[in-house]
Amino acid sequence: MDERGKQLNILSLRENPEALERFADFFSAAWSRREFYRDCMKACLTSESPLPQWYLLENGEGETLGGAGLVISDFTARGDLWPWLCALFVGEKHRGRGYGAMLISHLKREAARLGYREIFLCTGHTGYYEKYGFAFLGNALEVSGESSRIYRAETLPDWEYLILAAEQRLSPRTLSPFLEAGGVASALLTERGSVYRGVCIDSACSLGMCAERAAASAMISAGESRVSKLICLMRSGEPGLPCGACREFFMQLDPANREMEILVSFQEGVPHTVKLGELLPSWWGETRFSPAP
Image 1 (cartoon, rainbow, N blue to C red):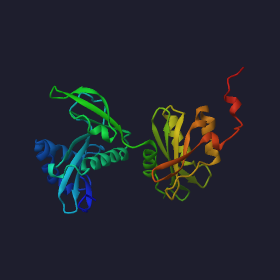
Image 2: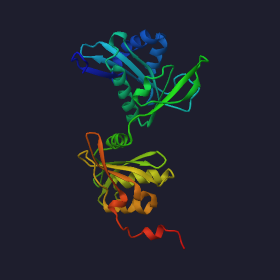
Image 3: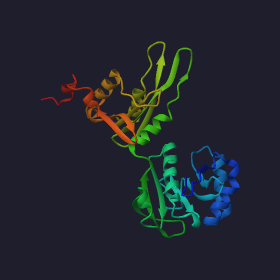
Image 4: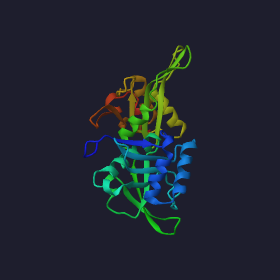
């Protein structure tokens, strides 16, 4: 809620296509080029790609307070980076109330929901975006030929990102009279910074797979084996510990995995973790990883 006690709401254009003209009016009033913005927004409504995305912040009376977008490119030479937070604007009479911070936080989480670990922006400002986790990355030329400052930020901290990634896969369902899946979901972060997800598969023939090993299978297929962090969400949505078979699997996979952190609980934003090595003290296979004399 804002300082006057009015309920605030952030609208997604994709979820509210009937508001196209309202979106186009707001952003063109802030940045001009109405037909350009409207064309981009029409693409948002018809594209199968997750980008672009557009958002408006409104109060309970339907008054638009601000807006911003997520796009693939923001007219810079850095075509290797995306998504970009763009066109952030808060109406002059509404400034100083934290609405810009609210939009930035929302777009970070939206980018994470779409599967992005990082988010970028280009600006001529200094001292503003730094307050919201953005770090200066370097300068880049814009289409206009002018130089712009490029910033990057994590969309969410590691554990929050992994929780969201697992939540998106948690969906109990029956695949056939013999197979069920999705009652448990897992997400893991590798040493290289990649994220892989998986769900449990339960079968009548006992050839199913735990969610943790399903995520590990995707990781191994991509050529990685070292896990930094692991989360397993039970049907209730609460974190759970991997079973003995999964613990053994990760330990056998790579000796570095003894240091992997496993989420036990996440109360009020504080993670409680345990290392795999703590769950398998005095592991029987340790000497087989030791170099031969």
